Length: 168
Image (cartoon, rainbow, N blue to C red):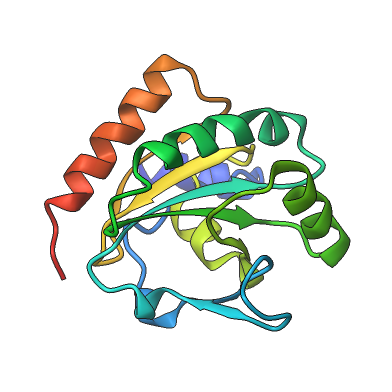
């Protein structure tokens, strides 16, 4: 096994090892559709919350197609104060966020993952969109890669239910 890993590293193929947990108290992100121009979104202010992060880029056609799916699932949980949907932007340009918000008009936070802390911890592949469900303790419950179909929606609903079993 060591020789295989060594050969992969020599050839330039480093295995991707992702964290299964982050510390929510360390996550402070620019809130692009927040109540003020320089608003910040702090996960630590949302104790006992299950988060569904939809990682996107404005230039990603599949991300744009998936936005309506995210909004529909968010509407199902609108009355549940323990569930928070977040559009997790990987873009660096404020203009990209303005376009995203203007086009999709999400009713939940759109944040910029500065330093890609959440992305680096939870992403399973390099492609987007990706969705991560995180329990209140910062552990990854489950996630999906790509456009949502029936199976992905079921996976995410089940992950939210499991996440709600965790209390902080």
